[in-house]
Each structure stands twice: as structure tokens, then as C-alpha cells.
Image (spheres, each protein chain N blue to C red):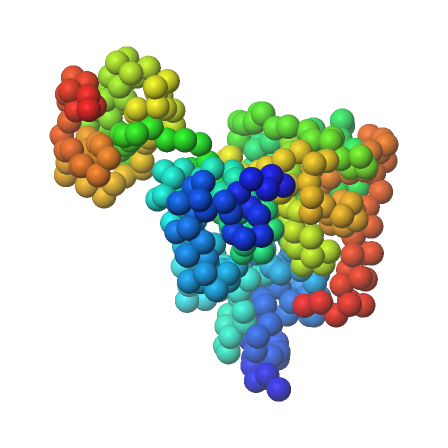
Length: 164
Length: 235
């Protein structure tokens, strides 16, 4: 196990102040193994993804089997093991959005930015994801850019919306 | 003492105790329900769905292994509908990955093969998915062949509950689910695996086997694990 982050004192906090907040979350939960998801939430929000060193650190601190932690991370879509783009674009591909042309929106993004769902642009500025129904079928096709929900989007609109 | 209750299975009245699963009551009364993910002594998870049965008052089918009996429950375990569903489930097992018996180490010693015979499967009516699955032979003694895995998670549970190592777990979900070792590493690089071989003995198919096993000549001793669990009194 790489000890770069996971040493006995709870990580090299000076080099990475974000670890301090993760350690605080672990402490708050008294290192209980069942606090895994809460701690992963903090780490995911802190880094935007879950670096393997941090995952190892959490596994160690909560005294959990590595495979259990990995299983939880890969089960929930909220957690990512790979670096995400600075901005995320989520296109709803639920039935209503699909019928109203979600695929055309995805194609427009693929044409302009060269990324497919689950991928990140080469300069790491934009990541593309899909979701199965946002529960906003009245807005079909719906797209979420960062925390902004756009309804009834047209494919040609995407280039403008995704230029930051 | 748990409360005594009366339930009816396939029209026969049976006296039993609260807190037992339908499956264990059926076993005690010599009613055979097909199961794949259940292993005596391990926690039941209801993964294979073969033990589904009909309970009066519920419009859903309930898995016998994880459903506890209750007073006046009326259970049907072998209706025509259930038999058909079981056949469909086994066919889905076969179509999901690669279960070509003739080239499998577990041929003639495989619970999936026996199950197909038991439920009367004659052919697979679904298109084969032909998933690309890896074979991990990085462990010095054992091999895991994901093509033969049916995701019953018996290996996961025996490793966690009996051996206490928890080398195995499941990553992703649905179609992409795979049994993983540690942080999805090659088995040979696992730090938690104790090379005890318990997972090999509980595996119902030819997904886990010792190196040197020859096609159709795999030896498995699930009764050794049952014996161990009983002697240690794990439950």
C-alpha cells in the first residue's frame, strides 16, 4: 500500500489541506466503518473525484476491506475514481428526453467537443455524462450544466452553453 | 423461545417457529426448492432469484431464502408459473456470460449444469450476450474465470464470514458487475487473500479453480466448508 497519504498521523496534511477535512469527517464519525459513504462524500466534494491514495487512506482509517470500499465507490454514480472535467454536462436520456431528441444533443456535443458520455475533454475542461431521467420530463430534452438545469434544449444551443 | 406459528406450504399445514426463513422451513419438511446463491451457514442475500415463491396476499414473488415465515402465511413453491420462471432464470444465467460446458473445468461437477437439468432447460431462448470477461491467473495457486461466474457472491460471503479476509467483493452494477479482489487488482497482488481456497469450494460453477485442474475433472468439497461452519458455530 502506498504510504504517501496514508501514514499513521492521518496523512500529509501540510502538503494537502483537503486531507484535514477528510480526517475531520472520519473523526466526527469515530472511525466507524459504517460511516464510509459520508466520508467518501466529503472526499468526492473536496477533490471532484476520489484519488486512489485518498481511497487507501480512508480504507485504512475506517478499518474496512479494500474490496468493500471499491465496491461501494463503483456502485454509486456519485463517486468517481477518475478525474472529472472542470465543468460537467449531464444529458438526460430518459424516455421523454430521448423521444424529444437527447441523442441529437449528445451528437452535437460529440461533434463539437469530441467526447462521448463518460469521457472528459483532453484539456480536462468538460466532462460529459448521461442520466436516466432527472424527473423533469416536462423540460425534455433536459440538460444539466454544472448546477444549472436547462430545459427544451436544441442541439445547436450546446456549443454556446458549453463555452465557459 | 420463539413463538410457535402455523403456516401452509403447497396446501399442507406446517407447525414451525418465528424467525425462520421459508427456505429453512421447507428444508426441514423435505420440500425441495432450487437455489444457487444459498450456502448453508452463510448469510442469505437473495441473489439468484431461483427460490422465488408465491405468498398469498403479495402480488410480488418473494425469495424463500430471505423471507421470514409469519403466522398463517400461505406459500406455493412449485406452481407452473414458478417452474417457468425458474427455467427462464437459468436460461438467463447461460446467456449472460460464457457457460460452454464441454470446455469447462467444472463439467459434470457443476451446480449450474445440475440446475439446468433440474428445471428442465432444453435450450436457451435468449440471445447470448457474449460479454468480454477476463481470466485472472495471477494467483500462484488459483484461477478466477469471470466468464463462468453467475454472481451468486458465495465466494464473497465465505471469504468475509468464514475466512474473515474479505478479499472478494463486487464492483459496478447490473450487466457490468464483476467479482473483484482488493482494489480491483489482479488476485495475485491481493494483500488480503490468505490463499485458503474456501472460495474455490463454495463456487457453484467453474469460475474458481485450482491451477492444474483438467477439463471436466474439477474436485470441489463444499461439504468441508459446511462442516467447518457447523463446527465453529458461525451463524
